[in-house]
Length: 245
Image (cartoon, rainbow, N blue to C red; front, side, top):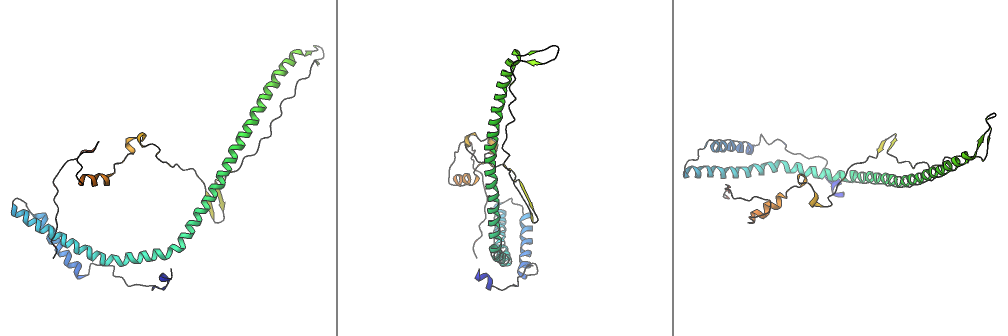
């Protein structure tokens, strides 16, 4: 960081290569070679030699183009890297802190969900027990009603008293999960998102299996001619290699 702090605040960088005489020279060469190659008719061994000469000249010109491009772009890229490096001590701690904040909220809500699951189980147990006890009371009251008599004149019921209904159980209140916390500075929102991992590749549908093209290219170039499920064939390929000056 000390090195970055001592660097100058400004830099003079050329950003337009078009007026550069080297650029203009390359542009003329490109136009000439492109026209020569595009207009060429390859109908004889001599024509193959001529177009090969032009194609290799094109490779040399391409090398010059790349060198000039890097001459203009590399300082910009380097300064961009230095600017990014200067800002990392500012951005990295904040991103790390925000990640820790998200983890703490998730951890709290995970604990609340565990508590809620336990509460739900306990409330369900209470409800089942109350329902079962009420069922037993209802059965017993049915028997007791059979033993009661009603005076036809007064309507007075005589006989054993009925058992009082089972009181409604006291349920535990839920453990709140904070799905959105709104503050004067903004909000934090927790939402469920789908994640995945492959647990058994052999059951994976074919449309989700991608060939390893890099590995296939490497082994076929090395001479492998047979791979199950892969068609391998030979076909001509023309390459150009310009001689060094």
